[in-house]
Picture (cartoon, helix red, strand yellow):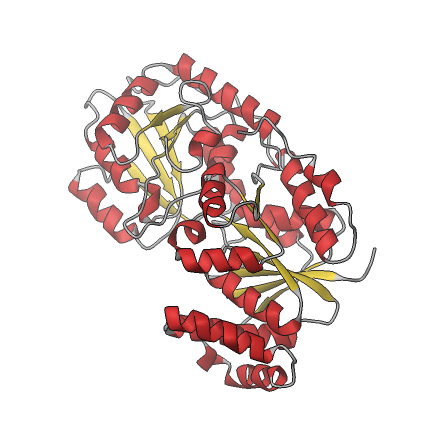
Length: 425
């Protein structure tokens, strides 16, 4: 294998909420790719997933704020002054800055100058996760250093980045992938044919065989129905709708909810729980590493994730936690929104309700609580769907083949793309 490497640019690393990225990095390394990780931010989570410890690539950190590392920025500027492509970069940045005259835009340029100077010579290609801030840094650094770059687009970056910026990044990138048909449709509308579909899927070898699930129906106060929701405490996850739905359940239905995830809305959600008189039934467990999340899934009776559009336009893609729940044959109640229906068919692999409707969500909770047999059938069908159509293998084959070709390690891209499953829709 050639000594050429691929630089992977991330907004933050490692992050508990981005298991799909850690899984991909590990899988790419296992396919023989040599990676190095460049993060725009240092980690804020106290825990790490076991996968993070298995990834061989070391993480390097760009200055989150330019004032924190003025010498690195000045050295990056000095190196840029000697590069042939500096005029082209300054022209591109000027066009961007006219449309986005913010401190954030200046910070992206400064981070790109540092990245361009500090990238080792054996890095042959730059790949970036997310098309918003990280892609700006990768794009500027790639132009300055005469490298090609590619992207993986996910959720917020697709729906909150301005059309002009997405269009130009899609045009400039060598290639890109996204993880839902919902996101692909948005990107294809701006730049047709520039993006490929690659579902994240799961490496099922990392997950235990599903346990036998209990038949609790919530009629026994000593054996309450155990509900589980996993997701960052942010608006698009719909925790407020879930709390409001739970507040309307009949008093004869006994339940408990575990909320796993950290985020900016924790205090507001805890206050909402208190106002609804549910503090003894809802437990906030914070952000947890994946083994603890899977343990909670194995102990639960029903997984609930009522995602919806956030006020600023942010929305989910296809949440990986849905596939993790399916790996344990845990029945799923979710909303028919974003990429979720690409995995879950209502009434077959789970139950889907409209987003932003606590009353309908409550009715579905009552129905599923009352029918353990239905829950079992839905959970088994979701696991079968996962195993058949959402293994990580096809997506990793596609991305690894593209990265090899872009880094000059292989030209056999078509063979890898042919491994994408036609039925994963």
